[in-house]
Length: 63
Image (tube, rainbow, N blue to C red):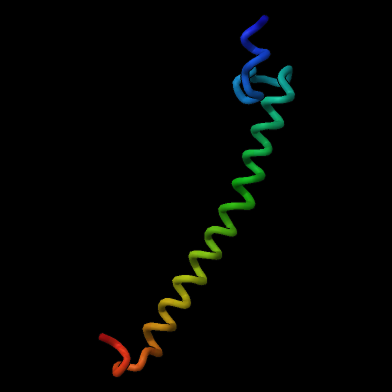
């Protein structure tokens, strides 16, 4: 039994001979390209709502 048979696709090897590790690398890149813009948009809209709420807050309602 070889150790490479129990390793994950990323740990199996590098180079064009190892298509599994190349595909895993591209899959991680695609996930990052999807997650980072979504996370940025969520943070942007939460910050925008906080700024608008602070600007429009009635002073009688604040502690």
